[in-house]
Image 1 (tube, rainbow, N blue to C red):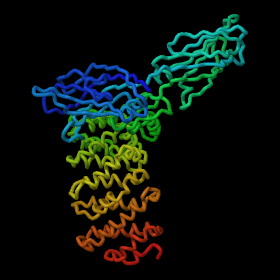
Image 2 (image 1 turned 45 degrees about the vertical axis):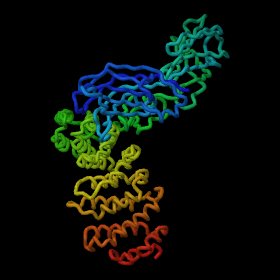
Image 3 (image 1 turned 30 degrees about the horizontal axis):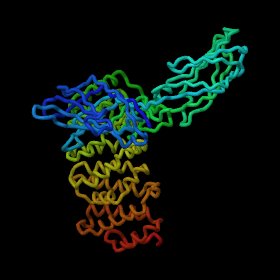
Image 4 (image 1 turned 90 degrees about the horizontal axis):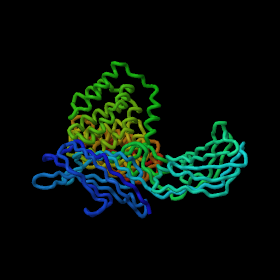
Amino acid sequence: MATFRVTICNLAVQNLLLDDDPNVYLVFFFDEAKKSGPRCFKTESQKTYDPVWKFQKEFEYTISDIRQLNTRKLSIFSFNRTPAAKVHFGSVEVDLHTLAFGASQQLLMLRAAWTNRNRIVGALQCDIFMEQISPVRISLSSMFLSDSTYTQQLECSLRLASTALKQFKTKKASKDVLEIELNNASLKDVTDSALVIRVKDKLEPSLDATATILLSSLLQTEKPMETFSSFLQGASGHPGEITGTIVFSNLPACAQLTVGEHTGLVCTGQKLLPWLPGPRVYWTPANDLKSLRSSLSDTKGLTPEEQTQADAIIQALGENPLPTSATRLVSEYAGFNAARSVALIENGAARTLVRILQTRRNSIANAAEIVRVLSTASEKARGLLEIRGIFGALLPWLNDYEERDVVAAVASAIASLVTDCKENILSLTSLGGVSALCKLLHECGDVPDNVAPNLLAALKNCIADVAACTVILKPLTLQRAVYFLTASSPTGRARKHALGLLETICQVSFIREVPDYVAAMNSLIEFLFQAAVDPSYPPQSAAQQNIRQMVSLLLNALKEAPEFEPTISRHRHADIILPREAIASPSS
């Protein structure tokens, strides 16, 4: 059985999209199915598009097993009171595991309640504190003073946090077991506490001294340390060392991140203790940003004039809607300039872009293009953007396929963010971004726009990581790549990027480590040779030339792989595009 102390406060909603005048209120269901339940509550209504509530709800929540937290959820529904009815226009859900182990600060997107549920209708900000509490007992025994200058008459006192002093008498050793209890203590309450042992010598007051042991130092592993030692400190210096045995009982097993923010798909912050689990969403430690910043020593500082320009750009990014001129300003100022790009990101551009991507539908394409410009400057700029939560803000827009210009811009930004940056590829994969790109490639048709080329470019850049490659190397994705290899478009960008994706798959060194590699490559062979004999592609067409180039590359890559010989042998008649020796069996 686990008990949590829950506090929900500091509520605000920004950038509401409503069909009627606002009179907005929120309803919370904290693992509660009934409207009349103790964990169901609502706010007062506010007649503004940016409502703020002086609201604080505190309660205790009990669950039989903390492993069930990932199946329980907090549901938040937004309503608007109109003259005709109460309209449910948006909602958001968070699993309780993420609340218990993630950041307390929330920035959650309210999604449309009925039609087009991927549409963002507002941004909810709030603080949700969810602390597991229990009656923690700390037992001390076998305390011993070593190297001591004390006489034989000692009085010792002990305290922990705000608890009362515990008095005991000793000579130079104590076999007594001393216990301190902390009622309704969280793990943070314990780690913030210190064990203070005060030693007093009746005959020599000048020897009075104190030893302080931080409990956090004893809890750095999942099994707490069972011994402690500390030098005494007093007016006369170090009159001795005290050691002993310590046992923790009923320690809470959950704690939120100490700093950071949860944005729905990404959670930033630092674990209270290293062994605690992280949230279910993608988690980025807060100290990653510090280490990345410390690695920027090769970027030059900005001149006063450059700093003034940077400040003007940050101000332009704050306008609503985002002006189209902002993209030009960023491109002229920071395009391919690592120092300026990093300066913009660190001075607030990344956080502003995240909020634009999360809340301003009419500015998504421009914001995504600015992300692309900043990320082309350097790998360091790409890393900083990812740590700021850019992926989490970009990915939801891949689902809004009605806005093809937006999807194309988002895919282009993702392609830049993952260029030569394996950390970002891993982040994208863990967030489900590579799967989303593949799914969209399956669904988009052969139309003369930038959606398919940008998707193919992003997938090509993701091949550098084996986890992403595992997602991409599926028959349907390969079939679509072959389809776009032969697709007709005014610019030929789809053919170019499809060829680049397939070439990269054939050339990557770890390809054989991918599960189901043989089945996937056999499928690719079949798709290519089927396209080779398709009468709709004349022998001298660009499509047929692409197929010829790809088949040659593929056969060369597989020439030492006898497991593909049966598939290749079935297509020996395909000399319509290649000399017969080019498709000879690998053993010949």
